[in-house]
Image 1 (tube, rainbow, N blue to C red):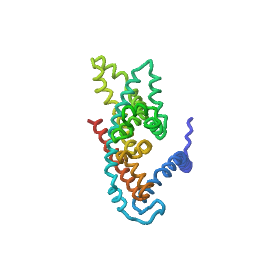
Image 2 (cartoon, helix red, strand yellow; image 1 turned 90 degrees about the vertical axis):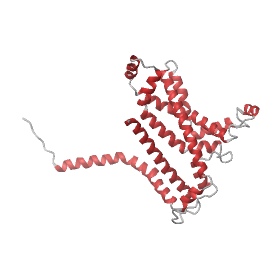
Image 3 (cartoon, rainbow, N blue to C red; image 1 turned 135 degrees about the vertical axis):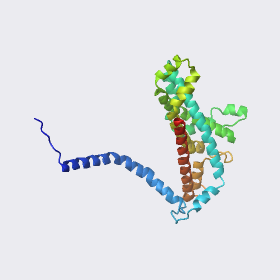
Image 4 (cartoon, rainbow, N blue to C red; image 1 turned 180 degrees about the vertical axis):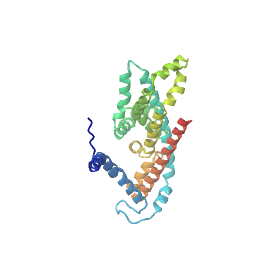
Length: 301
């Protein structure tokens, strides 16, 4: 004999309400974190960008769009944008190419696999500011360990615009290559080995398997690494602020350095700095959307 027990609508409603409350309880810490550290500052930045907001005086009323006009008219705006784009392109190409190369090397290496992975990944554990200070001492023509060599060659790591950019790129590659190697390695290990085995049986060589199998199946990882690298490079600040201070001759000023300078040095104008920040945010959104659509389009084709 089977006994059917009916659940009352009131009990079902209580269970549903309990589940909803439990879900809100689980999600509330993350929601609070996003609200306090992202939404509120974002709203404040938009408010400041549309207001006359000196550093020491606070909000003095709406003056939109004067802040944006002043931001674009800044004498370093165009130069900082051009330099930031140049640095972003070079850093992205170097990091992705080197990260993929290192990942392929440590994937195929068997005897020294653990040692190589650890060696390449160790610099990633060092903070960017600390790494920049380390390289600042290394590049120093007075106290650095390379000072005698630099004096003999008559060359300076930070003495010219091209040398300063190359020296900073070397720091970034040393600091982040292991991190991008790890991301690439995860993507490579997700590719089934049966595909490579079938390709070898069909007579495919290393170049064919790399170009026809590895790269197409690695596109999601390449998309992630490209977005991370482009976004991080466009927001570059610590390395140039510590190593070059924007020099020589204001040739290595990034957009974020310009924002810092407008806000806390010279103009002391938070309104114009916030307008610059909004422009950078809009550029980041557009660039990331274009990248995502480009990768999706290539996948569909």
